[in-house]
Length: 236
Image 1: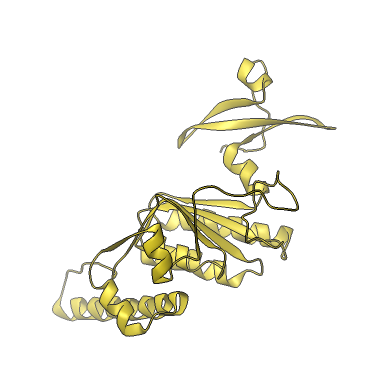
Image 2: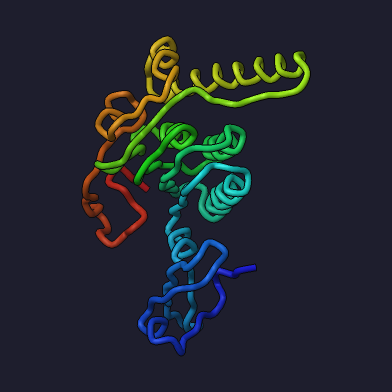
């Protein structure tokens, strides 16, 4: 299994320069080289950003991804329960139960979890975006956000199909309640908006209450202009 902390190939000129690429199951991933009193160490870029308390939710939301995200959140809480975490989301959505695992972990841990939409946050992706800490939910200016009701299918005996139908209606009702909570919208308005695919620009998502801010460029924090993990609203 790939170890993000393993020593890189320092004979490689890119590695000697402090950058490089590493082959993983996900393809080529950039690596960075850092010097310390213990020598040189290489990190894949995502492991390095995790040290800055940045977590990525990229691609379809499914069980394996949810397991990785929840593990990262729990690890960051164990390292520092008082320091904020930022979750960068670029996702078309996916499995409701996997998304709920991430959502519930975000609410469960003690650090505040800010959310940032880059690219798109659709379906379960928009749900996770809205579930971030109030005041710390951001989308970049050209991001796309989409909400809709959950979908699914069932087969088998009529009684089994009836059970599955009741369950998906229960899930829809629960998600509508949570969207209403996170946006401040009346439940009736959420139900109407969620009936079909509703696409929004960043500004429209802000007006709807899914996010708090739209950024096209991040100002440097007043206390530390070099801190890559912080957004302007971060007080930690």
